Image (tube, rainbow, N blue to C red):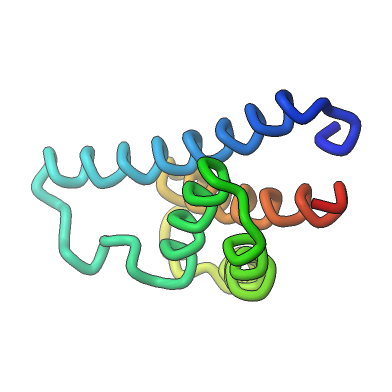
Length: 119
């Protein structure tokens, strides 16, 4: 679908993924802060958190550097997180488990759609 889209539609799709990922991450942090469960270890300062930032930067200002980082680090880190999740102690139908699987799937999908389209 991404490859057949116009440039304007592609830009909207990139923005949509970036906004969806950040919305889910901020909702989680807000909910945990309101319920008194937030800890500094929940800040997105790991490889996938870095991927969140790179997707946002690439959606706003696409460039070769962010795309190389997305391919070389983010896609493989998110793939490893999907195979070996550290959130596996949650039941599979738990909101946090589903959200984590979805965020990491989008972290894989974003660079894959760029790669497949030749961007």
